[in-house]
Length: 188
Image (cartoon, rainbow, N blue to C red):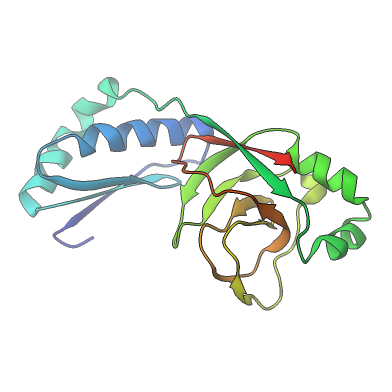
């Protein structure tokens, strides 16, 4: 990461427990003098600061572990109009009625795994019955608030941007979330 960043990497698959730990670790590191930012990822924490600050953080990592309090996330209810441009294709492809797809997509809260660029909210896996292939060719522009599925993962486009996920609907608001929070879609 050069002389301005330290990447702390964890082994294993992403999970809600690991995310809670990483968010807690990032908060503890961010509170240290000289740290510019500490951002959690799927299995990482990226720390920004001066070379001296990063060396100090690295030297304290082993002792820091037991003192980290895992983040206890908030639940954000997000109203969604299931009106996406791919909804009819999704119904045909999955051989399911619209109501079944909506029910499977909105029946439980999804974990916020990662906030990507620019503001894309990556959520946990959907029920395997509504897993979808990505588009063969990404759209040049997907509007902010679009809710999509790519493979087994669902997410919300935080800003207008190109994208290749299948679009099911539109969120009426883009929640202000951090990794470790949960999003519960409410059909609007």
